[in-house]
Length: 434
Ligand SMILES: *Cc1c(COP(=O)(O)O)cnc(C)c1O
Image (cartoon, rainbow, N blue to C red; front, side, top):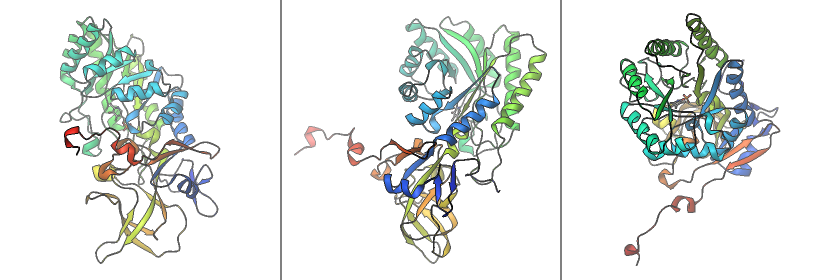
């Protein structure tokens, strides 16, 4: 069987050729909830998390889920029940984890611009660790903690200057990226942190990018982190955990990223070699995976609105747009597109575009598809950085989100927005009213 975005997921075709999730035809989902609509498979999500958990079983490790990939409360609740930790990048994400029943002591807080109030909220919630991204931020965290008479558990996010060989917008571990503290400055910043009574050094953190599809960048980053840990230990700075970030890629279009087992296996093997020549206890290992946990657990259901064939290009205008799924516009990302039902139409080459007034508003280009107006399409591998990046551009209400459980039951986990949602936060000042 060829590998593709549906391989290993709970999305499959039934005997009539209709695309289903857990046996439930997506045609029924579109009928019941309308389009555009994100559809997630509970078991695909949980099983991809479990692959990481299994690969880390019997290790002193915590698999965190990077919330920004998809922060729907129901998905957080499912992962919290599995024992996942969480990687957050804002106080809003902190509140989401708490609202969904996740444990604060399993949360790590990343991001280059945490505000004082966000730091205070994180310290108040007693999260596991704040990942510090600059010297200025170290001072800010120390000050906030001191004012609250708390001790801030911290790690420094170091920038190992490794080329993750991914799209420039999702590469984060190169010295020209805004993320982390350059490796050659890290030791000095750790020494400073050690003198600060309101911070407690607990770890070292790195995250080199996203949609990484080979092992070497991960292992190179690990080696650089381990060199730093050796230098820190020599300076009497103890490290209790290593946070190796996320970034494992998924199959969108035939990519063959390492499996969770292969990636974590290689990392633990390398750590084992390193540990053998050291006397200090083995640090706890943290990971922060987003895309690899949720990416292939979701599709975006959309309907063909009208066809606009032309002498140069054939356009199919669909009811999903860049505000629903921004990845193609933002990174020229490629998503598989599958017809939900077999079609009698003639096959042709189509650009699938949304109704938004931007030339960048396309979802897929140059696809051989047999299309008629009203046909349902599934945009594949849309679970990660789909809904979480969506907006109301062009005053388009955000799509509905539906979770399909293991029995094929559909649950609405975010209702489609309405006009009242669009204007809920706005007001016209009195002086403008007649
Ligand atoms: C975005 C992000 C992640 C998750 O990246 P994925 O590619 O989705 O696994 C992890 N850690 C940090 C700090 C991030 O910014």
